[in-house]
Length: 470
Image (cartoon, rainbow, N blue to C red; front, side, top):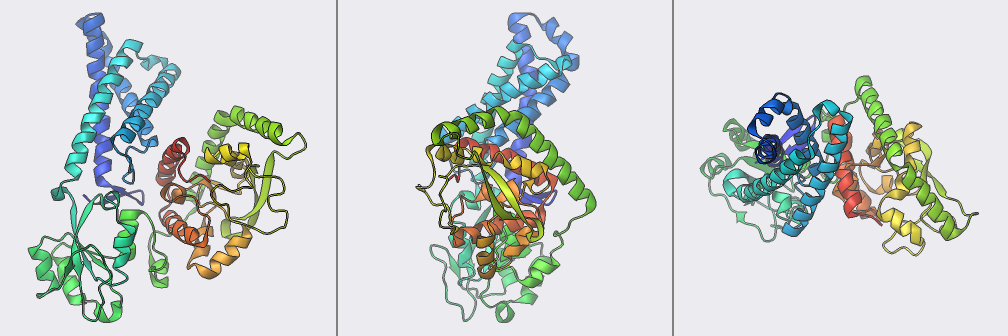
């Protein structure tokens, strides 16, 4: 199973189908739940009376439940939890679905469900989801449903795949048949099958039923067999370079292998007035909803900071950051460090178990509450709701000199949360900044309202399970 592009964003087709199948099962569960409730508690005639309006109820319930399960990361290919972790997330997702469903039907009284019907429906949906996930795991583990990938090259460039895609979840939709060794190339891949071809590449690809060939050569100019690769394409085999492969399968742009020509000629780096306007509307709506939902929590946080540090200590922390097109602005956050955290004026990365962090600050950083005041930065137009995290000018100046294309992340507004925050832990070093930039560039290249919506849903999982907090 490969990936499919939905509004520029690459989605693993297996999880796309899992979400669709679950949605269909939830629709059927509401029909079955309604019938069971009427059969047990009333009579079948009551079912016929409620049948005309049940389709709309089923659609609302299925959509709400799929969204709530998405916020738990249950349709995320990078989820690495075992069965117990999946069960906890599933229970959390259905609890959230029940609460949201009750709220939705309260706002739409014409579609209201009886409480007994909802209980039956949730129970049936829970069982159906567990069964579908068990079947999904068994099916997606079968090699027949995975793309067969052949890597052309076995040197240092090809070793990027083995070092960056070690886990089973990283290779969710494909199997690597092997690494083709070319002349004058020292193999660097470990634990993988190295192939010494004794026949033309196109013939080998046809015999072994290869679906994709990844060109990962140390010396492309002298080693690339262009004629044979062209014949492979004529046979229906996809031929990708390493950068495009990682973009599709890992959701990131390899900055060390993306050439200036690739960055310049890629067709997806685009922006227009309509997309900018729609994104701005999304930012305002999302920020306003978040503000309405969290203002009591923000008041409690302010009180907690006062109680810990005294009434004279500042609640908020304002710091200069680099925004759109490199323009500086001041980001607003709840203060989580001591007042004299940088009394010497020297900028420092935050570290694990940082002694500068207060007790209240440790909690609000772990739960991301300290980021909430940035809502006002978004409403002021200095930030977006979704985008690369803004960095300090001192760090940006250093990183631009050492990391290729680092300035490209400033082509969009920085955000409260972003694609890199979902895919990579907290960054506190130059190497972390390099790794996160690869995800930021993916967002810059493929940004859309759909991707913003997906990041927003997944951010709930990050907050609930404390991923990457420091």
